[in-house]
Image 1 (cartoon, rainbow, N blue to C red):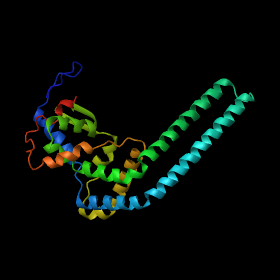
Image 2 (image 1 turned 30 degrees about the vertical axis):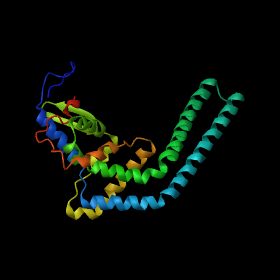
Image 3 (image 1 turned 180 degrees about the horizontal axis):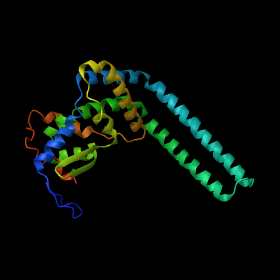
Length: 238
């Protein structure tokens, strides 16, 4: 592979080497049986308590929104009473309006996606966990799309390919590899954190839709994965 951007250094890397590195990156999403069993049980429990949690979150956000509006009213009164100069008034008002907008956005996201969050997390993890197989049987253009979704930065340094996972996948890719004797203790600690991060990202509308990968699984019996790494989406590594 040779970069076609004029700003790139004048070096090249074999396309099959890039393909191998990309395939190895997607293998990091393979979950072992104990991991799958743990997060599925955790999500099932989350489904049972989610409605109450959603009501609590909605109530807390509405309280916060009311407090912001009260502060805006008091700020306006202070300005009208000439207790604040205009510069200080505008600065504090701007800060409060930013908080108000963020809180309203969180309320809207909660109303739109909140009730579906556990199911969305379950589907997300199921599809992410099959990323290695999906990449292997995908068509070239589909592989490129996967690389763009799963990575935020793609660099070639000499003969080394550096793929940085995008935000929703960082905790999954960087999770520790569990030794058999450590699984009982380490899996709950690791996956509780991963689920907390994914839940927070979903509430902010930052969890990507992986539904396009679901159709790839049906191709496994009819499509041979490419063996040499060519046309695997490496064209997006720049």
